[in-house]
Length: 256
Image 1 (tube, rainbow, N blue to C red):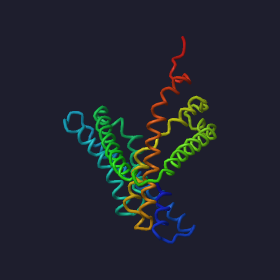
Image 2 (image 1 turned 120 degrees about the vertical axis):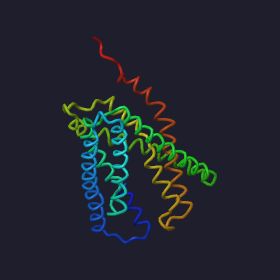
Image 3 (image 1 turned 60 degrees about the horizontal axis):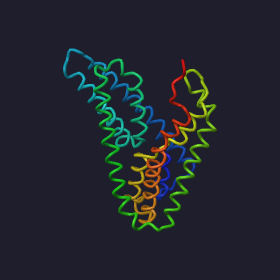
Image 4 (image 1 turned 60 degrees about the vertical axis):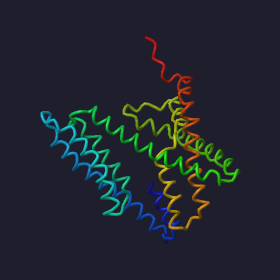
């Protein structure tokens, strides 16, 4: 997302040299991460103060605080300091995810509410992207449908090459330093789905068009390609991944 922001600024006509880009990346990423950790720590202390199990409203207060933490970290980062709100929110959420669970009164309520919010957010973005993509598809040349297939295949190949080449590093990240098995790596290669984040960015490009620097036709193609790739990964990868898992025997229980 940070690299997307840099590219979008360049398309919007801002003059950025290599030094400006590096300063922007450090400021946007590092400062946002520090801010998110501070906000997450503050809300963690607040959540810990609301852990009274004898108070009927404590569970509701804790859930409300996690939602407030997510929005506060984003709004403060973007609106006040003009740094990455997404990275700030991620950092705050990681702090809460690492520290707050022993203080949470009702885990089931917390999971349920956040799953509902996640479902509603994904549904709105996919519905909006599908509506916009369906409207512009009638204006997309036939050749671009072939380009879409090529882009989809290249993305699968690049993802597969990256994961397979990173197997030694991924093994080091395991808590017990166990190597990443080839069947697991193949499922990771094939199971990569394109979803809400890419669609949201494509919708923004299609509507804003970098302050008019991008033609309407090019903006429509961006949304068409991103939406098309998301559709192909859902229709092909998601539906066939269970078959791949079964064929590789990943879910087989060991014989006693």
